[in-house]
Image 1 (cartoon, one colour):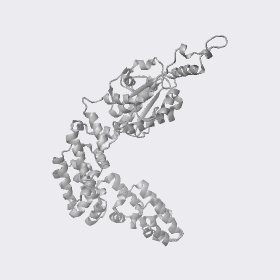
Image 2: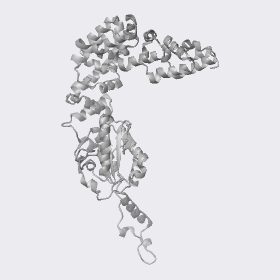
Image 3: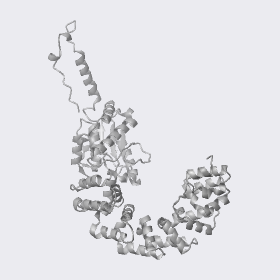
Image 4: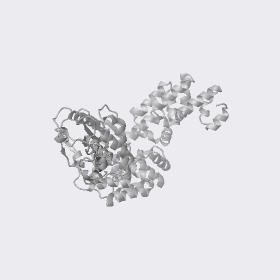
Length: 530
């Protein structure tokens, strides 16, 4: 903040030139301008007496999360630089109702004197926690917005800050900001600038001119308020009885590379991590995963997806599982890919889960090297239930008329099919193909020749490309063409559309299947003028 203005005493500020012709004292132009500036600034500052709604509230000592504290303490200083930071975090008494079943209303941050409307409130809610994206969280946020606006005077604003866009009908103003790391000033400053810019863009007409000017000036400044940072670090958080959680959040953010939203989700899914030592448990596990060949981003993805991995014993769980997977015939890089793609496998029992699954797959007729290929391609297979997933799916595929060797071929080319739902994925695809006029035998042969067809969506891929073919062929001809050359479904729509048009101009539509395999330059030479 700039130093306060100091006015010189009248005896020193006046000179002979300040006397008017009639002998009365007159202030010099500079002094008059300074006094006018003081009057204008005084009129622009928040009222010395807070509004009634503010005085009904009481400061609270406990904040929601470290991320919330870091952001909102900075905003408290930015919005009301003359008000103690702790005063902006308040609880307000309200009457219980069906819409709000509590006698207390606790906005994450409250501010007064910052909007044009008389006595209006600016409430800020930080919705960075992942539960705000789930239906129950969205519903509660909407109820809270309504309760806040009902409590506050007309012209008040509820500003909701989040990291992901949410679709809802709500009277709040939404602001999207990037995630930031704990105690990382550049990323926090970026988020603050995003809030300031969004407030100016969405609500400039409702902001007090003083705040609008302050927000504009802030966008051009660098650095954050040190007092606010100190207040955020010293704040007591919900669910904290000691200093373990701040250290855990800092470790997950700085050492692992998670953002604040991911950190909150990890701790919510695996609260037991707070009881583990960072130096003795968490850090060695992260280093061990990096030693397998996982990159920093892959380690972050593993922990965000399966945070319980951090609680596994390296010697009793992680090392034996990795060695067993390598023993199947996978290379070190393939093992790293398995862990990065499906970290849940590290929690599977070798004797009760992994070995039986591998033996069952081999029993279908796959060699050891083929089993290794399946696992390297689709490591999720190791986590599928034999009775609930693998057996029913293979039985259903064989029921289409495929031989045992064809089933093996399907699994080798598209092992992901073993994880698809029969009722939601496989049956609908087969019934749709039959609806084109294909016979049961044709569908079976099609699947044996091109198993990836099961991974293609009907609405956005299969149906769209079939409609395109119908523009050039009869319905029966289009169905026969797809039955004989199902790879046509694997090409991009634009490529298929362009080559159909070119082939039609050359009267060579019957060459479509072969023409689709040609590189663009070879296709252009064979069909000139394209």
